[in-house]
Length: 328
Length: 242
Ligand SMILES: Nc1ncnc2c1ncn2[C@@H]1O[C@H](COP(=O)(O)OP(=O)(O)OP(=O)(O)O)[C@@H](O)[C@H]1O
Ligand SMILES: [Mg+2]
Image 1 (cartoon, chains in turn blue, yellow):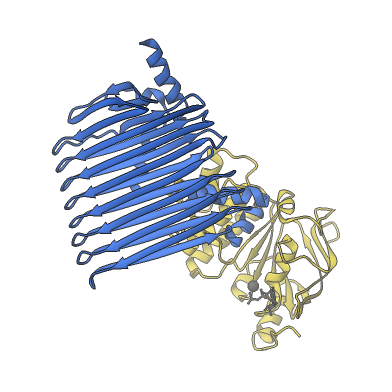
Image 2 (spheres, rainbow over the protein chains, first blue to last red; image 1 turned 30 degrees about the vertical axis):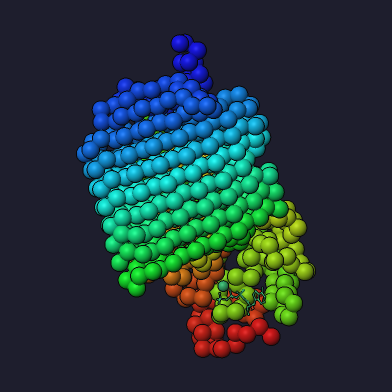
């Protein structure tokens, strides 16, 4: 048993956050190392059934009706050795009127050949609020392959926000697919912030279908690619419902021999719906760069400050989670 | 005034673009510890001159020399000039998405502690509690952005600041605050060179240069330059460099 606990501590120690906080009594948590559930602690109104499958786990998670879980629920998925496969099948249901936040850490700090596959089916029922923040901690070697797939349904008047952050270590190879279907008056926010170095390959495919009346959705993608890395971003936002509103924001900073493409597909299938779109792809802004150089930074240092600024921008729930992570 | 110390020496500086000679042999001496103004009509070459002094990319001079604090900096890149205590603030400061004010103001600071960030924000009249964690982005007003720029410059503890039109885009009240701030900066022993074509701004300086068509026409007391500027330059439309 003690070795399991040590493994938990070892994983949590790679996250650069207060381990004590993450292990406190009032914080629900599920910790998974490779295909073993190494830690599980629940709070009132949160139901989890999990089982180990070949190379991973399958979990059914439910937040009960009208339950409000104040502290973020902490998920930690890790592979500590240099090699390994981890598959996560997650079925999550946030029931009517519930409110919950998940903070997920995926840590592969020593990876040379690690594959992390996630398949999530998420249902946010009417009037529920659900936020999911996923932070990756990767080795600097580029030996990680991350393949998340999520299909999300957001019910009437419900709120869903998700943020994917990969700015520590080498991204490796990412193949990211998220699809959201939004019902009447629902609100969706989807943010990805990713940093590519070396030969990283980043593929993102994010889709929101605003089916419901007065539904609203935002897709924000901020990526920096350096060295020989590349990023391909496809943002698809379709407004179908009356008075649906959408916005796509894609920023990619390209440095060195890196490459980036962005394909925004915005469609409006109802005359009362409205979708806007902004994209900026290229090197860092010259005025920003020179400003920092007049403060004594070299061009390389200034570029890094600008990139870190762009990558650090978070959505509103991300700030709450961030505060939770800070030491007292 | 013989015992005055010269902090910046611009010697016969020529700057030309593909088509035009913009600076036609500029020579100025900047004494340490004062507020100096460079006035002149639109297109006189004022912004070009400070860009050359700062050594911004694309503003490499073809002839002349720039001596700063006794050292020839003509061939130094921007950041090396900055590290020696020379810096510049623009008319319209850049905005940085996601970069926190507390981090921005300390970018060039010698002392990078949290206290310093609070101190310089206080100094420019912005409540640190309200501003430290905001970003240097579009949500700031023009006046706030300018003050944050000055805060970041004060934190650097430079020897000389080049200010391009500190009065542009702000109302009279905000301008008053900026000037109080400039007095404060001066009290810390920092020399200021400000560019303007406003007689009101000019009056707040200790000494002035008059620039027209890429040349320095005159220099001296504020009264003298101001009179000349009001009576001759403002009515004159001789503002295209020939
Ligand atoms: N890179 C450039 N290429 C071509 N012409 C330039 C360049 N930079 C400046 N100029 C020209 O040089 C002249 C001086 O410009 P500058 O911006 O220095 O004037 P200024 O005195 O600062 O004017 P203002 O008061 O309007 O700010 C102008 O005629 C301008 O068009
Ligand atoms: Mg100018």
